[in-house]
Length: 135
Image (cartoon, rainbow, N blue to C red; front, side, top):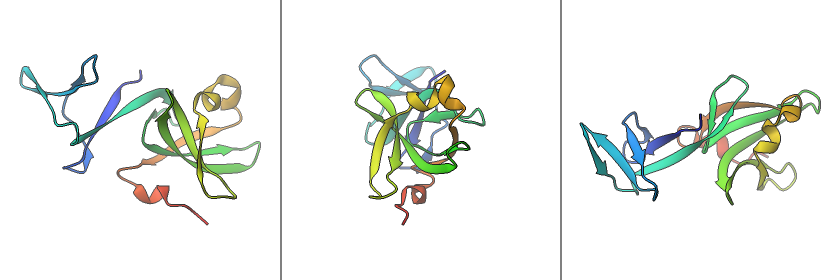
């Protein structure tokens, strides 16, 4: 299940309210039995990738995760983004410290699962410090 979650910019937290998105991408909130169109600048919709992490937690756009390999003996801090029609793992380049995109699917296919473990460690709203460039 892919699903989505909604971050409320004013309340500075993920909302537990019920939202709906129409075919044109317009966001509505459920108010009793009615749907009310919402101010799009107040809410950030983050789509689920359909892929779980090592702990069976759904990975969402905006999540920060650790991608590690016991075979390669390396770990990388990553951010999930939606770019050019697909979910990507944005990885910090070890030498330049810049962020580059890689296709999330290439890390979640059966043969790659044995090479990499993905673990969600936070998200861009609750844990912005996780995005700081490390030296």
